[in-house]
Amino acid sequence: MGTEEIIFISSRLSLGALASFFAILLWSKTRDIAWMLMVVGTITAYAETVYSILQTFGIMGTSNRGISLLSIILPNLPTVFYIAAFMVMVIRKSRLR
Image 1: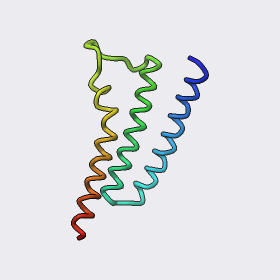
Image 2: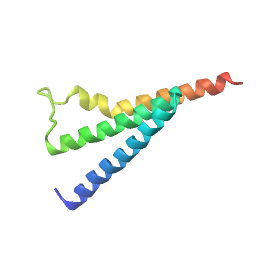
Image 3: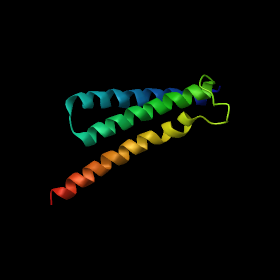
Image 4: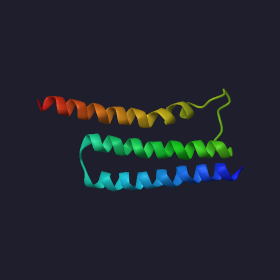
């Protein structure tokens, strides 16, 4: 593992941890469903980062059939939460008119 890869991994972990920390702080201060979905999306994005780094190190491997279900679902889960949050905001804004 080269220096570049260590810098890449450490930057992904530290920035993801910082984003998750502030997302959790926001979660405790708001009860808005759109913001809560954004928070959950941010936390799941960090979980995907940690999972992909564990796969890089060989700690979390693939299943016997080639690819695990978690490897398919986890990278797409944050986007699903972001889509839901944006939909809530669009619906909310369209009802105000």
